[in-house]
Image: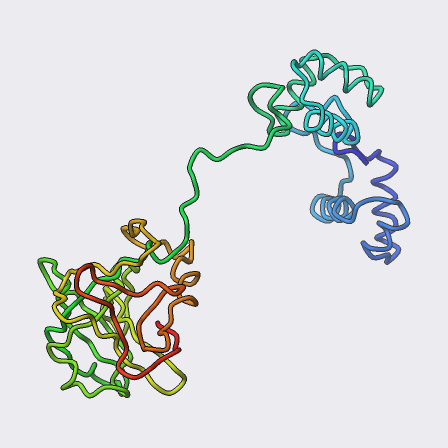
Amino acid sequence: MGRSEELSEFQRGTVVGCYLCKKSVREISAMLNLPRSTVSAVILKWKRGGITTALPRSGRPHKLKEEDRQVLERVALEKCLPSIKALTAEFQSASGASVSSTTVRRELHEMGFRGRVSSYGKPKVSKVAKKQVDVSRLDLRIGRVVTAQQLPDTDRLFVEQIDVGEAFPRTVVSELSQHIPVEQMQNRMVVLLCNERPVETRGIVNQAMLMCASSQDKLEILDPPNGAIPGDRVTFQGFPGEPDKELNPKQKVWEQVQPDLRTDGQCVATYKGAAFEVAGKGVCKAQTMSDCEIK
């Protein structure tokens, strides 16, 4: 049944009659060949007001039946005709309906068609190029741990203040206390992911993430090369893009990049074989963990 058609009073009365005879919505729908939503609407209106009469609808009713609208949509998408007049003629030939160009234009507008008729069947090209998802979108920098301490009331979290070459140190909460003594964290050089969106952990705003080689039962902080200083950028040969100002969680950049972050056979930190490198100073490495993921 087309959307522009209304049920007759007889049909509405039949629906209610079937309902009073203890028929279910499913059974009534099958018997009368009506959508379940229509049956439910008639019954609900009768329950609420004791009426089955269709109330006047707002807005201009469609001049075309639903099947004709489907034909019109197909013609618009497939034919790429030069004008609304040509499209109307083609539609009339395909459907047998007799309508004006004005009606056709209005129906197309309600379907969401805009612009030139000749462009209806052409795919839209995004004006904004989709940014490549690779490691260059991560803002990886060298940092120095200024202070580190056990987070109160926990047995696995450290809270650190880390200098990354900015006016103030960044606060970082890390799950390292079961792997590294707090004394070994003091004044340590580290690699940080600096453009994750800040999140709150145990009431503390976490402003970056420490990069570690990781296995099921072991973690090792990545060591920067000798001579690296806080704020030095970590780069990757073959991936020259600029990092995002802040990673958008909805784009899941980290989730797409992280599976390709690994240490190689010599414990060098890599992304798809390209080393974590500080220009002119060397590469970042784990102490002993080779062929492990980095996170």
